[in-house]
Length: 135
Picture (cartoon, one colour):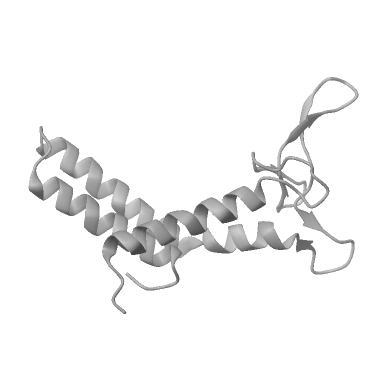
């Protein structure tokens, strides 16, 4: 069975949507949709799933997404799955797409076949990274 480019794009969109939805709430129901980090003294950073307000009224990152008091710390499975999907290979493919779209925007003033073809090829490269394939 041959998979069409449209099917690949829809599969990738569904995959990212499902992972992002799962990663937006911790197992206990705490919201974790607004990931943020805080650098620690001595190097490194902590990863948090959202924000809360402390006793002094200051906005702080909460809850921590890395868990454990022994090495290595761990993440909840839905957070780890989302982080793994959003790894460097996808980031590089997205950066390439944004660069090419910026270039196309500077040279094309209307919706031409060439621009649409470029969008489709680059969107497909991103979809294939999400779906576990190469570019």
